[in-house]
Length: 225
Image 1 (cartoon, rainbow, N blue to C red):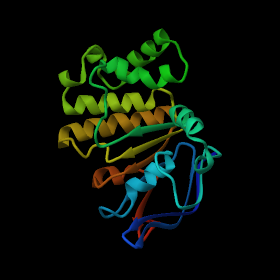
Image 2: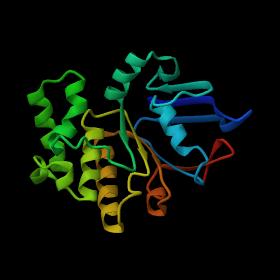
Image 3: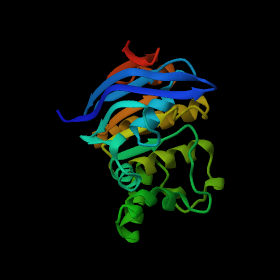
């Protein structure tokens, strides 16, 4: 199977006064296409840092990070921006929707930015909003949506370009139990439908049971549990 994630001896450290604070220490990870990895670990152990490095939002201090064969650590910023938009989807704890755009306009943006026409991008946005049960909310602005609805829009936006990998950082962390389960079901059904590799960071025990693998990040490395 195609390897979507290949990480070798990844280090990440920050300056803390005169000392180095080591977050990731020789971390290795390989993931094949369509696999679902759930990452747990104590707060502050580096889970979000790892996702950000995988997504090209941050840089490691050493090691190799390849996504779909491309070394994201060596990419120029412009190339990395285009690569992220085509290959990587992101869902965060907060939805980060643009308040001046409708739900459909928010969802269509990754496709439109990648070069597709506005008409085609909007058509695809409406299709995926239907899949997350928000077709009737397509023309609504974020302030007109509930928290759960906004997060479902964020999921649709992350997946509109049919990315090779979806990085999800506590995607249900701000939601109540009912909306958490709704977002969970939609997210897992969509990544399965698109055969998208999923890497999810979560403290939610029910989510941790839904991966092909569950790993714990501790002392700078991943351990399968």
